[in-house]
Amino acid sequence: MQAQGDERRRAPERIPTGVWVLGGVSLLMDVSSEMIHALLPLFMVTALGAGALMVGVVEGLAESTALVVKVFSGVLSDALGRRKALAVAGYALGAATKPLFALAPTAAVVLGARLLDRVGKGIRGAPRDALVADITPPALRGAAFGLRQALDTVGAFAGPLLATGLMLLWANDFRRVFWVAVIPGALSVALLWLGLREPEHHGDGRRANPLRRDSLRRLGPRYWWVVGVGAVFTLARFSEAFLVLRAQRGGVPLALVPLVMVAMNLVYALTAYPSGRLSDRVSRRGLLAAGLAVLVAADLVLAMEGGWPVVLAGVALWGVHMGITQGLFATLVADTAPPDLRGTAFGVFNLLAGIATLVASAVAGLLWERLGAPFTFRAGAAFCLLALAGLAWRPRALRA
Image 1 (cartoon, one colour):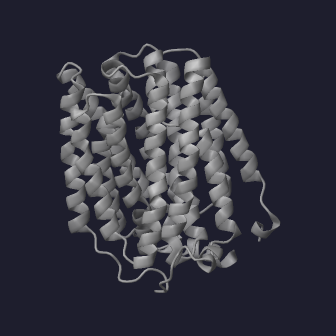
Image 2 (cartoon, rainbow, N blue to C red):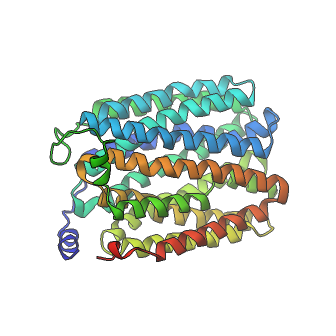
Image 3 (tube, one colour):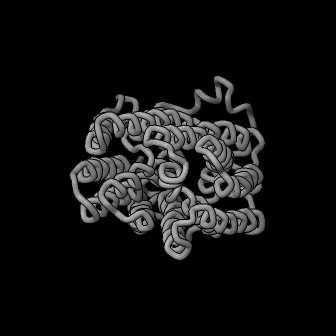
């Protein structure tokens, strides 16, 4: 532990260029995706006649599909020792699905498009995160993941902002906005293909079947503790689609509802990189606990009745919590996994998080329809307190 602390204090000042490229790729794809996702719940409810439960099922299945696929792409990237080709394939599939949303006549077609889109996200996710860890010195790992997450999130608020402007310009024409989203998706694939040079070797160069028992045994107790806390945490944070529905319920005009995601992602982007840098200097476990506490506050605020002021306060707190925790979980996985098993480690982590996402979003949709929005957010706060309890408990083997 002392050696690790000394290494973190001797951090070089420059984050590798490849991390900036991966961040730019994430930014462009998120502009494309969030132009669609910010409007998709409203498109399904108002244009296609779907209910809140259907929205929850679509979002839960879509996100969990992405996270389940990550385990296979992560394992494959470890087995081949190559990650860039898989990342390019995943981004290309995501870009190719964007026209399907503009053409969708029913909620079932939207579900199919979301699943294909998220398969693409699943293919690229674990290799991309493993690439960040491969090309970054350990002493800068928190800052690197925070930077990539911050750039990703710039796209996540630029997309809804652009969608809002186009909705106002084109009189709530969802489909025309969806067609515009095709452009940044294609640009992200080109930037990754041309702009990133993959390192020759990952870790110590060993190549073995990552799913063999002896390989999985090398993912030790510290890693599995991170996985367990992450899964419980995901139960506490259901899909952001319910923030959009909460804004509509608060009386926000239809064309302005995407501004909720703009506000959340703006706060997210502003806090992700500083939180990543901070995690290189302080206890990462303590910082994660702070992020969970902020999520409790966000859920309790969103459970209150009220319009714009309450909604904005709740989504701002949600954004702070995302900025603190998302890059931090990636850093913790990279910290606790052997270099040659990083892809597998990210994939397994996201597999269990994906199962939790499906459960959380479906339950949230059911609670919303049966008991109302306030109860849904209070339930999220309760799960978050459970995650905090898990964070406070550590087996003796992890205390060294």
